[in-house]
Length: 388
Image (cartoon, rainbow, N blue to C red; front, side, top):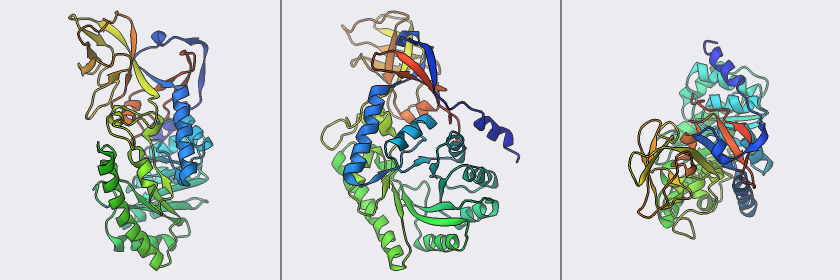
């Protein structure tokens, strides 16, 4: 295969935890450094697991958020029905590390990617993918050569306009062709409304999300009328996790950011508060103060190459009045409020990420902080850069 060197590069990446010989302080980190507060991380795991049990809705967490097989396995250990990935390369990374229940949530339409999916199928006990066109299905059928059957979900687009089909006849045609291929098994439907996740008002978010799910239910009713079994109806996200659970036919939630949280989520309302505080901020980026061009501001060693942001800026954990201003690829300037304590050069501060998913993709490792405040181990971001 022409892309085999790239496949080999994914398969050769580390995916196991590395224990430090001696724990280190935060200010000993090679900054900018991606830090996971383990107690808060585990609290988020348990909160979502408890919610899943109480609502009798499964969770199928999205690994595109963390790109880490260690975290996938912890999520499955806490009751997740499996994990999602956005791309075949992410699936390959997770499969290589022994994650055995994976749903690929983006359509595959090229021979090269279908071949990678075929390779993943040979390593994963329970693999499923989505399609939204007969063309995509034909590409899969032309490349699949495996002993295990692959599950297929039809991706539905109601309003977002990113992936998915809005045509009922296309859905029925895809299902018919899946049923005619013994290598494939129709599993159900996927519906994701990512454009709703950060609506500031909880009531508006709820109204719009449930209205879209009503249209998905109409399609499920069509399948029921034709005696087509729809075992999985999956979708939703962190912003609507406690909204979409009200949808009767929904089987599982594709939550992602809940495990870490970020500033884009913190500023929207939750069901019971003006700010989204359902889960703890467990992910930060540690940066070092390296320069002070003028009084009241200090430069840190983290910029666009350390934080990904489309809308908001990083927020200093212990300096709520300070404002972070991007100052290029490698630097950020922290603007201090009048009367706020000056930072000393060489000191390390932790920042809430603007958007956790793409920020993670900028780093090689998570530095794991335990209850004592010290860094004890490293988790590789094994699927970093796996965007194909």
